[in-house]
Length: 163
Image (cartoon, rainbow, N blue to C red; front, side, top):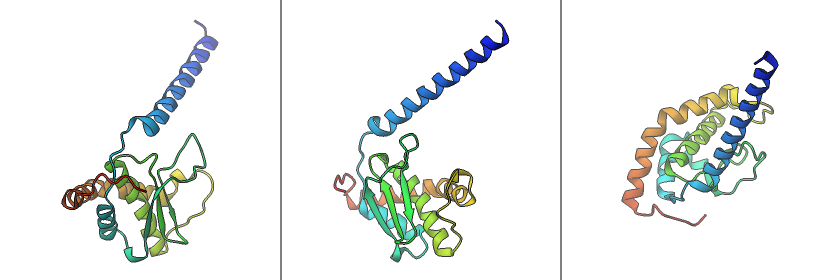
């Protein structure tokens, strides 16, 4: 095989792999995860423990208008209204719910502390506020999930289907 053939083969394999991963992502996020329900009491308990100034924070569960089909978002923080929006069509399990909730709580904490630079256009994934939010969700994820599960079991309203 010559060099051009190998380059074309590698490009074709990379494209096929990308399309396979995209198909898997879309199917797994939207169709394969069963609905596990959520507990409002547990969500409020976690937010109250980990958010700065939780009395001004509002949490809304439901559909979010997606800006991109290829990169759907699971949550969004609106600093003007201090509202966390969680996309319930994508966030289907308690683990994912806690991960998204913690990420957005970190953005709330950044806003309250005056450290947030929201409204950045372009590749926000590498911005310092995003890296801090991802690290916050990883660091507190296990603790918050245990708190969420304990409150869910205690209150008994784990399988709420209403939005």
